[in-house]
Length: 147
Image (cartoon, rainbow, N blue to C red; front, side, top):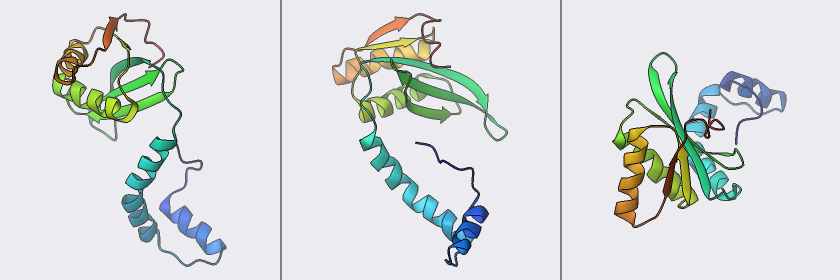
């Protein structure tokens, strides 16, 4: 889920002051740092179940200056399932992302992706390690839903 309003911590401080609550913006920031993981965990439990066919891709993007690889998976309905930002595009990063997504959403039947060798190697390794059967479809334009 995304935040509904683009508020800064100082906007939050002013909003609370309008309702008679004296609060510092640094306190709000500490609450965000402390409670974000708990909220994320609770929201993931309530999320709609994902389909059995996933689309996986990575893209090179600039995030606050440095360039990073964004791994992203969506299900057949176009629902974003998971995202990972990483410095490297290799089998280790792809495997870390795949394990994270499988842990949260279960094992898919089919994964459609572009021609990434790192993703293919990660899926094959995951199949070997966990005894799962995730079929790989490498069709470049079929996973345009991801972009």
